[in-house]
Length: 301
Image (cartoon, rainbow, N blue to C red; front, side, top):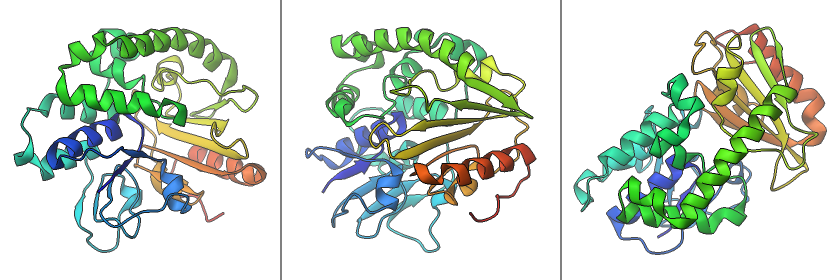
C-alpha cells in the first residue's frame, strides 16, 4: 500500500493523516497531476491517491479539485472542499491517536488562500503559512525534505517543527528568496486588462517565492497568469493561473479552462504543462479567456 500525493502543503498533510490512520511505513510517492494524466507514473493496486486526479488501478482516491470530478463514484472521498487533507481527515476521523484538527484547519486555510494582506506580507509571523512556503514541490531533489516534514508533523506541534534545524534552514532560505522574488515579480510582470502576466521563461531557473505576493503588489488585477519552463523538463512550458485573493472579480473557471490545455485545478486556481512548441498557440488562448472574464471556458484548442 503506497500513498501517492502532490508535494505541496495539502499533499504533505494528506500523507501525515494517511500514514497515521493506516500505519503505512513505505515511502510516499510524490507526483504532479500531469504525471498521472500523461501516464508517466504507474499506479498499483492498493495505492491511495490524494490531492491528485483519479488514476485507474488505485484502491482509494481523495480529491477536491472540481476539474477532476469523476462521472461515477470511486472508493474514497471526492467533494468540493477547502483541502484534500480535510476529506482524508473526515474519512478516517476515528483512526487518529493525536488531534490533527489544527493541522487540517491550516491546510484548509492555506490551500483555499483564505489569507489577509498582513499574512501575505509577513508569513514568518504565521507558523503554518511559513512552513507551507518551504514546500513548493518543484524539484525531486527536495523529496527527502518533504518526507522529513511529514514525519515531524506526525509527532510534533508546529512550534517544534519550526525549530527543527532542517526546517529552520528552509524557512530562512524562503525569507531571503521572497525578497528577491518580489523584485523579479515587479520586473517580469505586466498587466493586460485585469490580468497580471508574469513571464519567467528568460529566468533560469525560474524563481520560487511567495505565491500570494503578486496579488498584493498588483491589486488592480483580478487574476494572475505565471509562465515558466518546467524545472524537471525544460521542454515543457508550465502555466499557473490563480484568481486574486483580494480583488475577487474574476469569473473564469480556471480548472475547467486549463483542463483544455493538459492541466486542471479548482474554480479559482489551476496549472497546466505542455510542450513548448505549443506555447504560441496555447498562451494567447488562455490569456484571452482571462481577459474576457466570462464564466465559461475558452474554446477547445
